[in-house]
Image (cartoon, rainbow, N blue to C red; front, side):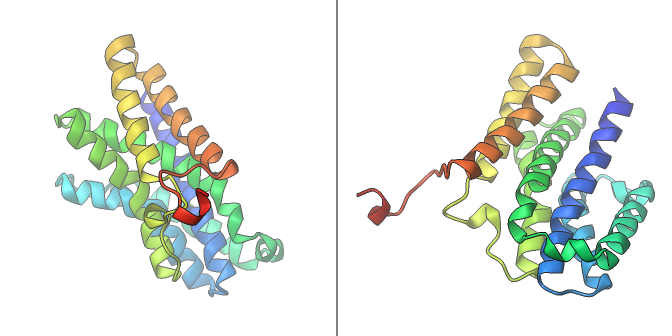
Length: 206
């Protein structure tokens, strides 16, 4: 199970880092900016989680291969000309993958450290959304988590609770993790594809 979790972490890091670098390139940032935004997007949520739970050393400090991987991706993104053609809308899929993976893994770690379902769900949401919040803020964009036309944090929150319930009912960590993760990714993609929102403006309802 540890190997599966570590693999998911690396996939989530790549996905979030790529989403950050796409935005950074769209803002004409230099290689240092591309790396910084990718690093913050990929590891910002986990850093906040570890700080709030007093979990030291920080996970990415303990696993230096993660920032090294982000650096390698940043070098490719900075000098790969086709990266300039990737539109900012291209972040939706990698961002959804990162949201799903880090929300569930953040909640799982909180449970492992003895926290309640409710606290674990909040920590899962923080882990999944904080990196993207920093990415958008630093790139002068309204963060997904605050946009009226986006369902984001609520999907993460619901996915964490689905993970808890599946784990309790099925007593299978692997199945519960898979169900929770896929729920977040697919619902996020469906929400973007079909413009599903929690609230619509009054003029759109008539």
